[in-house]
Length: 79
Image (cartoon, rainbow, N blue to C red; front, side):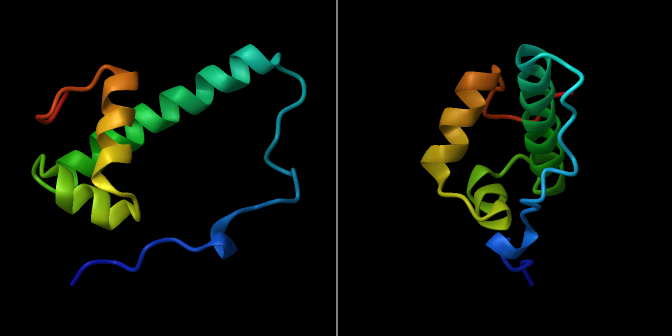
């Protein structure tokens, strides 16, 4: 059975996890690195199946394909 998609209740809006000691550019690079690791782990967990990965992440396939293109990930699993 597929896990339930995340809800807004999973979002921390307190700002407690924001590191204001680093420049925005560095913080943004950390976000991009996280997105890349997340998608790679997601594809690994779903044997490279974009549709299954998108469902598990609560995203539509086009959003996943756009993220893959932006992050330089191919349609197959990456190392």
